[in-house]
Length: 273
Image 1 (spheres, rainbow, N blue to C red):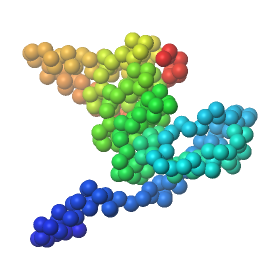
Image 2 (cartoon, rainbow, N blue to C red):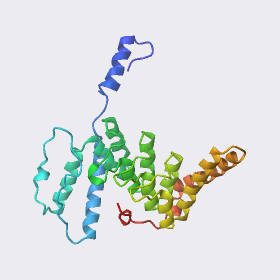
Image 3 (cartoon, rainbow, N blue to C red):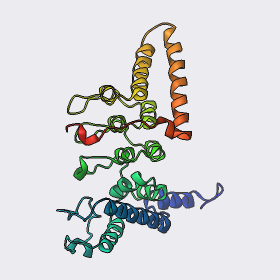
Image 4 (cartoon, rainbow, N blue to C red):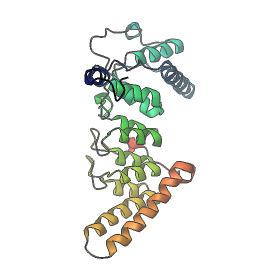
């Protein structure tokens, strides 16, 4: 790395190597890959203990591979896989994932080394998985109630209002699932509480339907605060202070006592697409 007194040519060469040619980017950390593979195996074991038999998948090509890669041997395995073969399949899938798909999968696991590596290798933070209702890594993190992963993605430019194929953005999903801490986070980041999905449901109407008082309160206060700020007069400042106090309390609770925000959540599939 050049020093402040180094020749201009040396500085330009170093900048070009780091930011254009990306010569200093390391490969996917083995620790991150191993952790993600272990998590995949654990999830596979949990799914198999919950049902008596493994149902064959009609099509396992759910995530795209890097261009130019030929199918792995597991692509040709018959559908009546044994438990061991399923584990190997998960591991080989990981090694061949497109950077965007890798970010998508690791977001739900809050695996930050893998997420950071995927972004360093060119992953689009708003990558869309067309095989799963055009969900994004941020929506995937919402499904796992991964607050830290959502914050990480937002800090790296994730669109807080990008909707899936059903017209539901991260705020819709957090409301349906009853994730109060995430609702608070998205509202602070400018999420549109008036956005409607394909069924013409906005987050407030969803929160009312699911009888989630905390989320209804947050959404209505956010709406009221915006309206008051748009008005002339002294009410704007008072409303803004109240808004900040309430959201500060919810944010603190979401980070330090998330169990206090647990409420009955709705099944996303219960809402028609």
